[in-house]
Length: 263
Image (cartoon, rainbow, N blue to C red):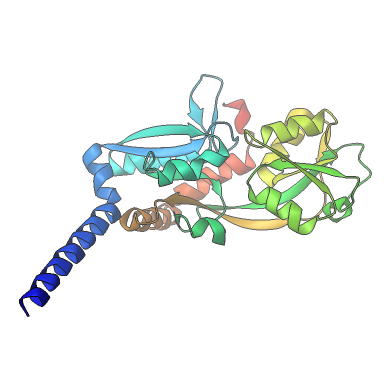
């Protein structure tokens, strides 16, 4: 009986310690407030979500949203630049408190990290040179067609799923390299967000968007898998800033205006 009591005592202590550890991890929001810093992982180069403007300041839709979040929390914003493939590892390693990017909460990603409610949405489309014979993205499903997309992205996934016969070439460094390769004739088509495609049409002047939306995706921010309070705070912030129209106005500015004139 004495041994049983000792075993139960050890088990209770272990369970209590585990609960305390879990609670500490789950209270990442308190850590941010105590630290006075919100550490956010963003893409190194991913216009229009995150990029360096003409004055050398990092800006973009995702960046300006988290800048407002940090202001609302009363803490300093610390931006950490990563290539797309490095965003989730940075979060899981504890280097960043959250990811702010145009990331789709796919089942595979949601099994690793915790997503907020969608911050905005994006339509995935195909882009081709002006002299291309194709009119709809469905016509690209041919073995002699080479399509470019950002590596490890839902654009690449959509290409594999909807255009399985085409040859997919994946790029790093955001969608900009895809646009450059497409404009220079090294690709038959590129797959990307409609907002990015519209900007490339303006920038390169020899591209056009094909008919048809391949996918309409919700895009969300992400936190560590046990950062529950921070996830709830993000959802609450989204509801509040949607109600006062400040979030929709930010999305409208970056999606629907010629923001390059100011940046």
